[in-house]
Length: 511
Image 1 (tube, rainbow, N blue to C red):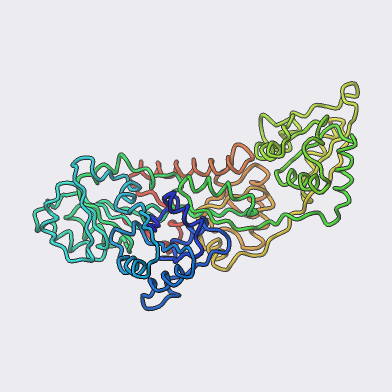
Image 2 (image 1 turned 30 degrees about the vertical axis):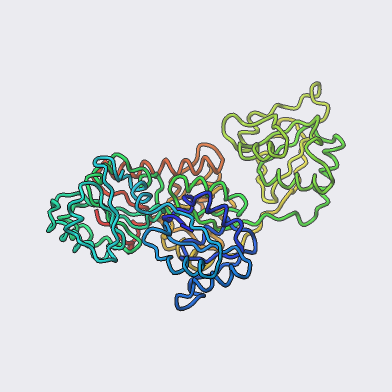
């Protein structure tokens, strides 16, 4: 089975279907491990290192003869510069049914991700393997695009051989490594300048050398490496459950998110207060219920399920949500909020639009506030001033998580992260408490004024603040910041650099 060029999202539908049926997967490379997400729980994973002396074929045949569905992952496309002949022959000899599943080859995918259309100018596309003996004079006659596999260590010599074979030394060349991943790095040069331009580039395999006029179209068609946060290593200090959608959004901007749990959400120490609140909600004690987080919605929903209740218990109640994320959690529960701030999505914004208590219109003057144990008093004070009586109930506790592994802590303090997203004051306090302060080159992005104030109290410089108190808006604000930084560098004639590359001792990419 072809595992594709690097981006796990380029796996074919047939490959994903067979991985879901697999009893065992032979992992060709560690980079293929993310593809295991398509497998069912309990699948047996066989590492190449676990099977010594090139006996992979024997392992595959043994397992298949034993009745297992076995998937052997190969880089790129298994029929293109990949030696599977012996394995296929062994399956045939053992009368084991086999299927060869094509994969997206780097020869086309990496060029696409680099913004190089391989057969646009001249309809000729030639792929060669530099690991095999080649007649470079013959390849110099290629009028279209020449793609060279396994040639990075001999790139300069190959360039000279192509020139000797008749290729002009001005012929455009692109060298790209880490193709289709957020580690992709491309240098554009010419055959005559390869030695100078690759001198300090530090390329390693897998890499492709692309020769031809199509390389000149990269300036207009590059779309992947020009993403606003391309290659940025972004720290997401949230609970695992909450960070998933945020991480997906960051990936869409080209970032490499790393989720570091700093907060663990746990039930209250004494559940009686929540039990009474749920009973009061059902029996008509409250006029309003105000939710200030998706976690509060989750806590109430779990209590409902515990008592065999559902969203119908909210009938006759007015429901308020502090922001879009909380409103979405309510809608998923089956409850449509009656009040949502149209301006600032915060406790202050909610109070600003909350109607004052009117004894003629409101038969009951009580509001239920199921919240975290460390919530501020802003909402309670504001509602009390409007004439409402509040039951401020602890729906869940936020507990500081265990410290992250040592490499993560070192990256945080040493400037290994390009940005960190703080989605609440507690994430600031907890991250600094378990891992230390982020390095001063790291971009600090916060969700609102209160979180900014807390960050500044800890001596952090706030670079980005979202216009709405939602994780999605915060990610978008960071992407806008990254885009402006990139445009400023290009306007100044500089190569765009990630924030982490500005720290002392950081590896510098050549211009």
